[in-house]
Length: 152
Image (cartoon, rainbow, N blue to C red):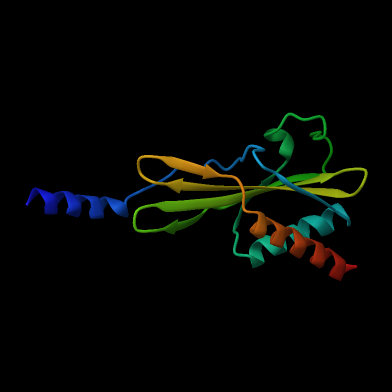
């Protein structure tokens, strides 16, 4: 009887997990690419691609609020940091939470995109953070470049 009770409690708790995923992602493994276009064109293309790929934009702000870097000046308006909402997927014994940060930064070469990805795997006793998803991020960056080419 105790065996069945512990299995029942375990199954009951499987669906009752919540994980606090921070909106800001540290630069553990940033994906960077330089694209060409005006700030408004690049910002619009990034937002369109994120929306088309199913990422809801949670907030847009200036990167200087989160990173103290000589590149980001609060006076310069041609920088942006876009936060996406977390996507949650529940499995039998774990849940995953993924989200993105997209930095747009004007450089001398063009507009630099810096995409940061995090996936938190909640195993109830341990949380695993993954900062890489090469295929998904490359697909997003390629779509942004295609949108910019089409606009020209």
